[in-house]
Image (cartoon, rainbow, N blue to C red; front, top):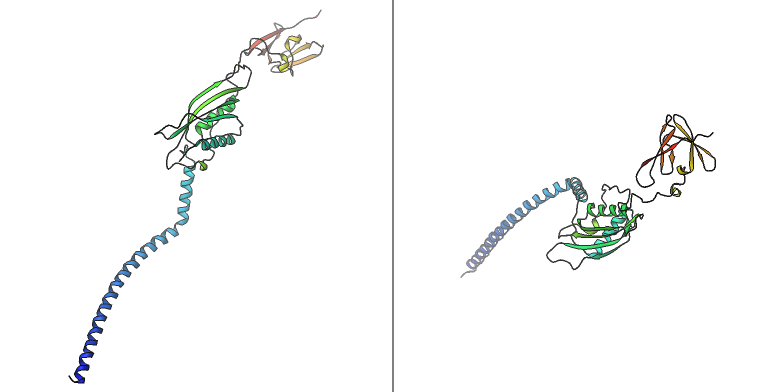
Length: 286
């Protein structure tokens, strides 16, 4: 074989290798190009979504804040967990929100029940009746889902005491996915009027001592000596003249009416727990 022919064969072989390599490389580049185009299209779509979210981030923040506020304002929230420590600390928080200081004994009521999502506790102690009413009202109506199961109140046979003994059984409810105990905040609730202690006797066997209302005139120690249409004149045991108008206070009561024709003054007094009329007639001196 001549050199010319051999060179021609070599060059032809090289040319074929180059052509085949070029075709393979081009095919590879085409596949890569399609792959990258798909990725670019996907990334472009994600970028558009991200741009839209970024442009609406302030609106999303406002919506999130509104949702959080709505959650915080819900009437009742159930806890995601409970323990004696969690419930005891919650009771202390309730007393802080009330601005009260009530001493009580706290314990879990028996062993935790199986297949239930609540723990039962008992508290007992002594308190002013109005404070106890406020505590029960807050336990039932504050945000944490707690149900009062039993409530016993006694006055220890102290008729004039403003305090009562109490024992309360309640259940703290919880479930997975509930609220974190540390996130529970105070809620404004309507109070319950308890202006007097229900267990305190309102009717007395003996008249109350005037010393309990010593700022005013003792009707048992005065004499009615004169009347006008709207005033009465009384003389006390020391000879001092006292002048009263309709509505003026006396011990445990007030001047209610004047009757000139019958020469009497009628006082409305409450010495036994029930308002009653006490009449003084004018005493004429010779």
